[in-house]
Length: 311
Image 1: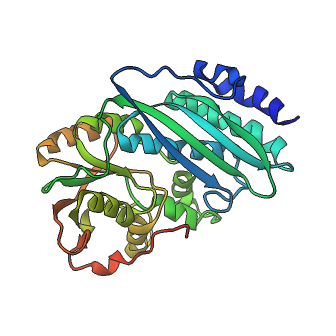
Image 2 (image 1 turned 180 degrees about the vertical axis):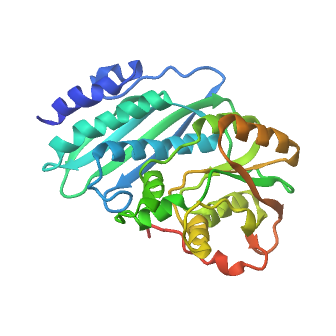
């Protein structure tokens, strides 16, 4: 099979009307009036974001979900996506059918379709780039720069589980099963993000660790965040607390939502947590900027820059 055969057999069935059956050079989308189109792009590279020997279906789900998490962090509804993928010739026959199946399953789960992209060969590694599109009412998306003095800082779920899963990916111990599953299958908080659209002042998804991503919120809002170490939700694993806390503060790939709200919404946040069956924990607050963007009282040694950086 050549690239056109793969596209027609495996990717054309994943498309929406806007894709025009992948017969043209571009998709056409009639934008709704009074709505903003929100666009985000992520690239996943073999050896950096995934090992390469995982089930291709799992790689597909992770690739799509990290992009869906960007939509959740903006409080917008995902509607479709573009996919560009490069695969070595010796892997393509096994990879593409399973990869397409993973996309199909998550398209059904999250309610979006493929509208186009590109498929090429690569010399050695698999490279996956997804551009995702969402929509929201004009000027109603949530940014990283809207925090106010006195806002409470909230986080969803537990932190550090994905990092622990990555660090123990080849362990045969049953105690790491859930952590490895979280590393393979992020859970983008799309529905919750939509519900937070009217009450969150700023928001980000935690892809690079709590400290680094909280710093983005503080810096963009020109405020300081005071973090309460004792309130950070940690995984229920039999590991030393320092290991759990280090994974929570500096580990990546959690894809939980980190957001700020006015204290008047505290009851509404608790109600949302129960309704969505997602833990939402208050872990700090915003104050006037004073020297540092992140403050941890009596625990500044936790602020060492350990988060992953590509360069």
